[in-house]
Image (tube, rainbow, N blue to C red; front, side, top):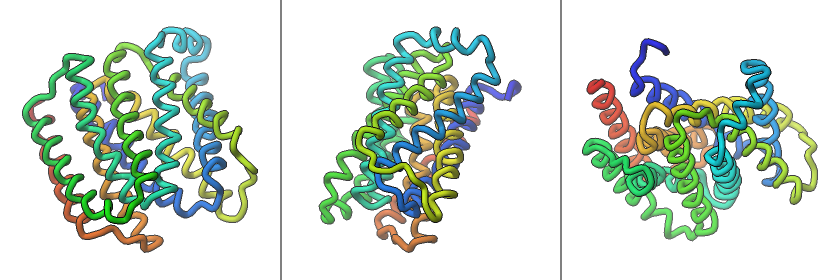
Length: 286
């Protein structure tokens, strides 16, 4: 990693992080635990795993790392908590494709917020990529509007806004390590869920599905995605989330036959091609 340019580091971290996330929607569908129980474990497991990892890595310096985050860490923990909660509420109240389509709006929102708060105007190729992917999202969404999943879709839009804000905060405080803030955010998620949860018992396949989800699809990705904006712009990081828009529903379709629409398939293909071309051009430039 030391020999890679910032562009390559950020792109690699974002790509790996998002690829780990892609089976997340499938595992949520396969689990039998209720929404609040799911939220509790998605907060508690990553909290314990990543906290222990940070303590082992930084030892006595861990407390200083937390203090050094400042107000950026507080804001990140808040937005990170909200995003985690709204994502689950969305995916439990609409189909997987709808939720991930809403999340695909994050790059556009990141670009707008970056220009407003960071004065970091996206370059032409990023603007073109955002425009193409946004049109693709609208194309996919046109069909899903008729179904009437507005409650789940609304939470999906809030999730996209949260992802955009997360990336902006990390980009703003790129000299600080905000991974501890994400850990605190996961603790807040678990605590919040405790107020609504009926039981935390894991039964049947949930004994394996929930821990796997918590480590592979939540703990590992959130560390990588938290670090990535330190090297590339917020909009570029969130462009990689568009991969989940198409790959996530494919996992669900292959295993439980929740088939995406033809609009999702066509729009998703355009999204993947756009991300591929954008990443190639960005890496070539460096």
